Image (cartoon, rainbow, N blue to C red; front, top):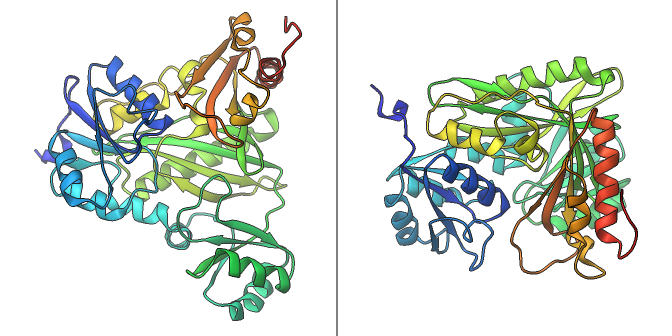
Length: 388
């Protein structure tokens, strides 16, 4: 048998590149199944490091530290995609890394990502490479105004991008975002932003979650709901099928999130992909039979994948540092509702825009769950008033 197809059984040791909240929730899921977890991070007090059995602190470009980490685990997964490719390559010389360099290289580089997906026949947002200001007229003639200029590397939560409406604004944006090559993308007038999380094992077995509907604030995910509203049911079937095909096309081993824009008329196009668990999938912890984090464990260990079906309609609301603006939040108000679940990430200091935790609410419908979770978040923020 191909050694890559072996099952990594509970009791083994799993490694995580990255110490953030996604690694923390992965660690909880792995430990519940009986695994040990070792985290590699350059943070001294990371959310994942607080709960893992062991943390190795080091620079991702330190070959000795990365090798020490890889030698201690049976398989490594990624907590976020902005991990140096050199680190993943070095670790893969010692142990399994899932997903591997080939997937990470696509997801890390916006231009490579778009070209790879388009070349495989998937619908993507129209784009154009920008190397100098002289490329702007051609991009504008193809994409139209306004357009979005983005860095090709290290972008997330709206970082590394600017919307521009004319050549003058584009010149300013290039000066701010450069000097590396940029990507220009068509400004999409969408009716919804949605995401689909898919898992795939080394044996090629796949599983897909129901489509999530997302709303953002200042480019950061604010609220996610599931299931899709009736008007988006046809879109959901298409998006889920595309996500499964993307996973197969990339030969994914692990978990992948595919984010889409939905245009009027039901057309969908891929905005971006993330080869990891995703903020929009946090509601799966309570709302689905298998959480995205347990599914990540199952996928990288080549275990049978779990049931992704929805138990109950749900909504998730992020708790950003802004909730702490007037002092310590009143978390007891969230606990007045038996259908609401509080998750905090163990971060010691709150600041505007920083993801500190999230709330999930279960209800009779996704819209009701969303209304409730938003009201609960506001009650937590307020110093007075009774929620129920």
